[in-house]
Image (tube, helix red, strand yellow):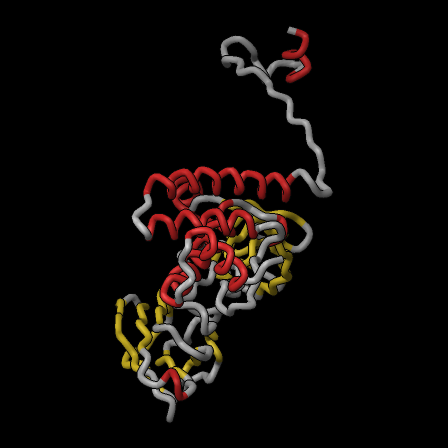
Length: 317
């Protein structure tokens, strides 16, 4: 598997651009394309399982920042299904106030902390000297009132937010050398650790319906947030990904040089490489083959599925 610097060297040789400025630009292109490819589909190499504890009366579950997408949930011994909140409101609004064993869940707005602040100010823990003066943009609310502010970090002391929060939606920061640790000022609880290579953070959140009445455990199938290509020795997240990245990176470098026709031709090659990559992950390794019959559409006036015999009656028609 090729490293970031090796891919940059190959692309630079292809387009005749091996100077330091071009290499820096190429790395940026590769990082962006790497994220794009990881988001392209549900790659099996990016799937994980995690047990999550659910406590009584806690219907809002925030997942760790490593979870990019929630795909399926088994609550205790049975699966629960995703549902749109507006559908529940129109068909069975009482469920938002009832307690019991949850049978479905809805997706909530992602938040910027793994633990919600308990109506308190945010404490940005002392950072490395190289990150002194870097800024963090915070957006959230307290008791329904929205607040926005910019916090300037200090390497000599902890820094507090001006406002109090019980929910934080966004937390974007400058490029930093070290990780950013954010705690609740009153509780002392670590709310989130934003990794140095990330400019912001998003934690997936769901709401269980109805409100849980007992402590249980959920088993969550999810897609991980792909790590970024930062260091020269970093390698792609997916197996066999290098050819696709090199093709996209070459196209981006050609576009940077205003060679648009060549760049477009290279994009077509890159899309072909992406299809090959998807094929390698889905069909060239161990997988379960499933045959799905293509049943014709039958209008309701032609077949009455409520009659005796049901679907068997339809087959005999």
